Length: 191
Image 1 (cartoon, one colour):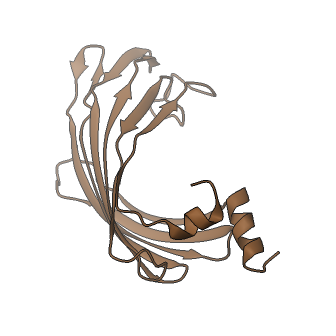
Image 2 (tube, helix red, strand yellow; image 1 turned 90 degrees about the vertical axis):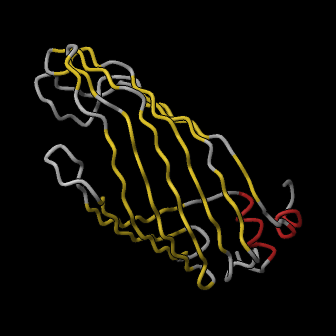
């Protein structure tokens, strides 16, 4: 899409994309502590987000189903409390059902499942992850540049001491700017 009229005529259907991320081991790391903000290793994710638009593309009635299958790959941490730690590949499957309830207000039901990622420290293997969670998110577009989102999520299943259990409450305020957004504002008579 190269112009504003192209954007206005856009009718999405099914799209499959590719994403990638890479974390680089820079910053502070204390090898005497098992928990650190940094991981002292390279790691990254490769995935293929799938988005399917259901029904109207009108902002007040938009509904999408989204899936994100992904693979996390980890390098070795050669100084994990004086030992070497490696991890198997971690598989991720994430899904979202998102609906716009009114102009600028949307909500989503979210699910995620992780499996794999078994850690091995100095040749001693741990257990692989097998965790799932559900959450909901609500978002409000304050203006063309600011969006506020609020969400709650929790893992489910598994009560063994080694099972991951987590509940989280998230509040996010995002500021975004793009020349296309500014052009649309000028067409609408805004400044």
